Image 1 (spheres, rainbow, N blue to C red):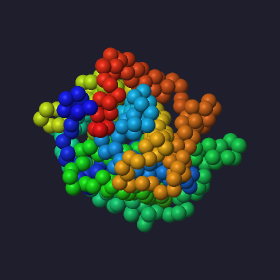
Image 2 (cartoon, rainbow, N blue to C red):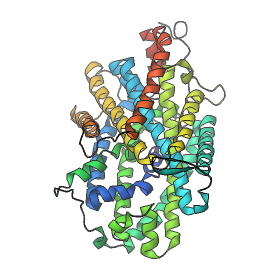
Image 3 (cartoon, helix red, strand yellow):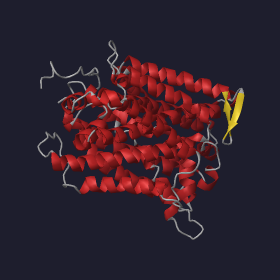
Image 4 (cartoon, rainbow, N blue to C red):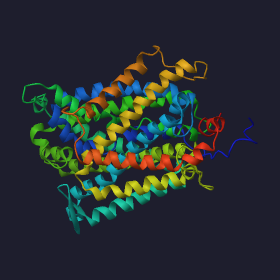
Length: 480
């Protein structure tokens, strides 16, 4: 079948991303701002040693998943990579499940950032808490925070609208500044803190066990490490100077760098003062440095790093989420309009608009929605990672001759570990009574609403989906 006579038009994105831009997107997306607001819960649930163990074990699982991506990404370097992997392996419906779960995971992180911007700035400037509107689930929603969330969402939307190059340039500058600022207070914590402040190393439950706390932290790991997969989202937009094989090494390198970052943050915050006192603060990482060194400027450095990380994460996941939705739309799996590309900027404008609207709505849930978005987003991201791991196993079996610029050594061992790790996280969140179980009602309601929206998109595209042959959909999704 000739692509020029029988195939529908395949919208294309501009090729503008370079190596360091890819690394900045991945690493900057992973480090984000969440550690500033969540490190208190990590230490409170598991203790310093438990939190470190959770991140090391979780980071190892993420590395296994990342290695699956390392083989898949240069093999199928198209936008919304997970959609392509699952489609090639299992067909349209499972590609939709994986793609929509991942898209919602990205949107939940984007919403997390839209709420966090108000929380971080209110610590720096308390007067920003203006014009209370209503109480929701125990937190006051301020009009000033809603305005701030909408304005910042608008800026991120505009940067992504005008092109991937603009988004990547912003990411490079923000990530470089973040690393420079973070080194200042991390070195201060490691050099001026004390190992004695890490005691007790573990948190035990009523029966004296420490596993429950470690598990509670570990199941959130997908939320904190998701971001390396921004590389496959933008693979189609790689410039000619980026070899497909180099994408594999960028994925692995970004995961290792993020693991090191989280380990250093936990150690430095835990060492600057008795951690059981540290976690009582609203923003524990900032308050710990201020009280330990009687140096407000160190606290300000933490918050500046948080703001920089907030925007690196926000920008990266906004780009990634729009590419997944674009891939689903271009493949006519959801309504075709979401697969359109801007005629001038070469960006997925409809998909960007959808991510922007959903992100702008998140601050309506209030500050206490942060943990709910973490847990609901972690569930969806783990589900997508499970699908990617299974897709690699199926593609190795059914399509052994597909060109693979990078082939993961060890046969099925690492993909199987990745799949089991993701499945274990999903089980821990679904089994009633589990210390990591999703809570009712907010987390369940968030998932119900988002999967219902996905169901609406799937059903509404039924007619369009049936009008495209398998060969045409292969061309639209896989460019083959």
